[in-house]
Image (tube, rainbow, N blue to C red; front, side, top):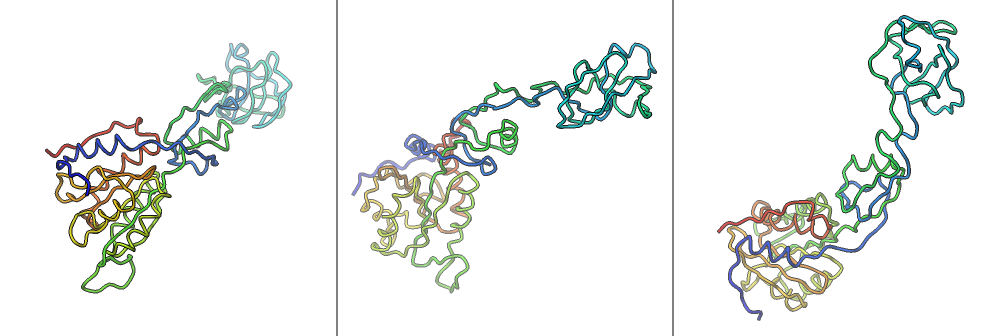
Length: 334
């Protein structure tokens, strides 16, 4: 039997867990469209400028400012430019190009007169009013080819669009932590199975699985183990494929609360198994080699979730290498 330790406060328990959890080093390459809420592992360098050229930001006419000394004025139209066109010809005195949004600015032009301020004839354009804005998006206005998206970073939708602009399709991210979930108890059934007066569904398990997914983990459902040493040991024996193993039920030390003893038999060293929190006093934390375990007692939805929020969210952040991006708040109920 392991030596008992003093009943811990919630804050003390959090500190022990956070001190022991180590960030994962495993990596993988994925396409950026699959990277939402993943954690960037390596810096990304932009492969291009955005935009690569000076572009028109409005539909109108490309002109030279120095030709606009007197308004109204009529200029000679010498061509048309749309987005994607390659322009080799520049403009000279009293000339203009018809130009569209996203089109490259021709050599010599330094202003776009919007079409609302102009009247076009067959080969001329009359400028009735000069707009104050130039309406030219300068080269590298958004990002330059020297821009670096720095890791570690929790990737959001803006980052995904930015990586697309950088022309980066595959990126290196940290592997999601594999988190096993095992519910225990003779009275527990899977949600959706037929119940009677003497049993109940493992209602907290699907909720915990959904939270793990939302927080960036990869949940592995270990199902349900009855309160039998052999069955529990068989399930726990497969926990070594997980980074974090969550047990629901049997965390106390009663005659039929066998999870505690089964974990010890299977080689887990438990740092604590009780905390000063009601409800939620029976709670375990320990490890075996590279697998950490957290045990919660109650299978009931309302009671277990506060404990799960208090102790799991930051754990997943630690595993994902992003705990440093958030201020850790320890909860003290003393």
